[in-house]
Image (cartoon, rainbow, N blue to C red):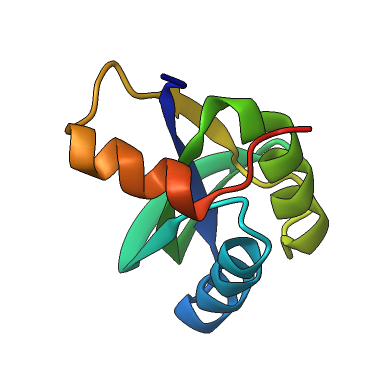
Length: 108
């Protein structure tokens, strides 16, 4: 069975994250996108230390869609350099895995 994949990214606000997330779910690149609001970030950017409020988005997909999902996410993302981290799942409940596989399109 193909391994599950979580993708971690951040957005400037919840409406943007939900809009991009919905597009990725409708494209069957992700089965679900969880949006967690009001994260406080401190990060280095272009030689300065910045602070901002962001939202976290965790995308549930399959490893075979990593490249297509990453490209689609990057194309829709408002940041110049979005954080896109691929986190292969070591395991999954069989029902959860079956749902993710059923709701995403296998790579062609």
